Length: 485
Image 1 (cartoon, one colour):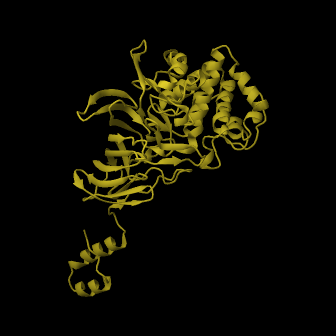
Image 2: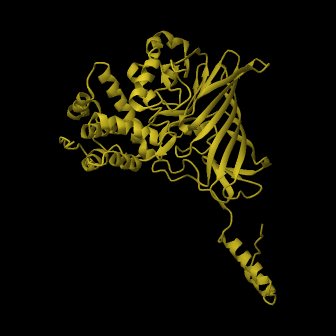
Image 3: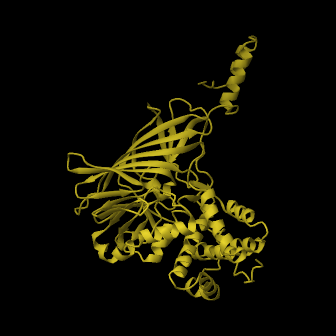
């Protein structure tokens, strides 16, 4: 480390007659001005169009090891307490004298990098970490953060609640789009996916459910139980979940041997039994249409309606606010391909998640003997504004603000884009495109530009210009013309 003198001119005068001092002076000048090839801090945020502070630059996370202990509090008003350690394995993508993790609320007590204590500070949602030694570009390192407190519930720009939701008998962690930073530090942007090990210790009588596969369930000897979950496939942090409560758990397997883990709040067991019994059937249907299932387990978490206002495609184990209907089950299951496996590069690409999942609803309804996808499309085009006032307000690929990334144009118009592709290429080519897209970007990230380029390569003889310009990016209600294909 070079310490800068108060006045560079004084150093210049004192070393002018010493030839060897010229290089030293140059080093001083460069270091003190911040120029040259020296260590830098990772960027605060990755510049997402809607959440510019989400994520961080300078490193790529490969694994999260989260060790959590939760005391829910009691009816006397005691606050719930989360005590935790996050062990984050990452690779430096540039030389790093500092880097940042997203974390809101909670009290940090210690940070280490590579086993050595690191300096740290808090600025808004950023935990700024300064390692004892600069991390060279390309180095794999582990940062450990010890923290505790009462996790926050975050209000989205659209008014919905996420983060750490306190329930009557525990908690429910939901992360889309930014809520995961309320319960663990990390690189909270969908562009950085990682594997996870999540161990949750809870009071006796409670169950802790998370993503992936349950590796162990062990009493601690002090009246608590630790549940350890493992997710081997890459997962965006917004798709991570922890559900703590008094659940009725059912463990089974599909005919192909895929583990199925379902946790249902006791108040919802009767109402959800028939729908959840169709999960293996819906899995088989989805694999037939979308290709091989991308994860090593499946299942569901069914909480009470008052615990959350929406269902969410938490990876391998979607969360439902009360007993779902079959169409909702299919929607969240389709997200395992479109959203969880093929994850958007930015939140502007949200329609790739919701358009495909909504179209899966149309396909399921068609195969169940209800309205065909063509009928659903036509009815939506003719009468959709009666149900969705803002249906034509903005194009699916260009929501106006962060508050609109989950609005009807993203879902319904997104599905209409998918159907227009089907109308253009025909059924055989359409399903080749759908399955090929899911396979080409399996466990990765993809943008809208990636998708349109893929479709054009898959069907080079077709003209998709009007679909992209009018339906995907165009303003207002498009003119409905018959496709030439």
